[in-house]
Image 1 (tube, one colour):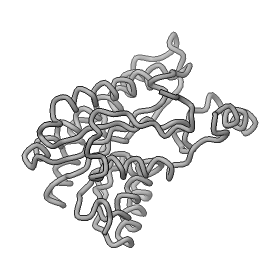
Image 2: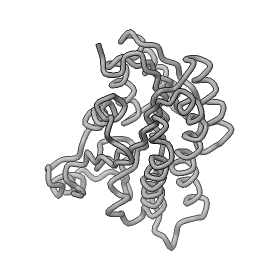
Image 3: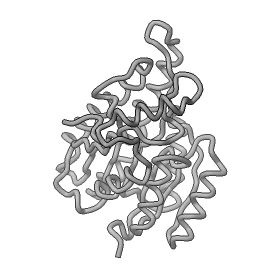
Length: 252
């Protein structure tokens, strides 16, 4: 019997990268999964097929978490399909690179809308039925860059720091009602979202990997076990915490 047997999860930004691997890990542990995607329809369909092959139910739901109306439709579809949501993973995101003095307001707003406001509003839409059942796990994906920063990513770092603060306040408000909120703050992970200031440079990437205490960047399958832990009963005393699978990039 899996650690998430009989549970229903909604994972945003599940079409690729960390969200995809978390969705698969949940399914392996017995959860059914609502797979949110924005533009990667074929990848989402492939993920649904993979989850089905694991013997679990899945549905792909298109929606841009930067748009409140899309979030409302996404949550309604997930509830219509599965009847409830036991686990919410706020993972959807993207980044672009601008120095502060050159950053268009639209770039700042776009990151904030997707990462910070999307996390807030998706949580707000899912929360009532969790509180009604007095049970739920909310896992917000932050970043180690919330702590250390990175040039060109002021908007991204600020949004991720906001997600951590939001998670702590949420935990204060809902933990006694059976809903536990925590964060994962991954370190450098080999995904499409990894920032590149210009074309990929293998030599520069190798130097960066060697600068990490562990000597390499991480992989998406090294993040998923933390999500399974936080979604399961094993994390019953974790409230408002930030877990950092980051290869030592940040040590707290």
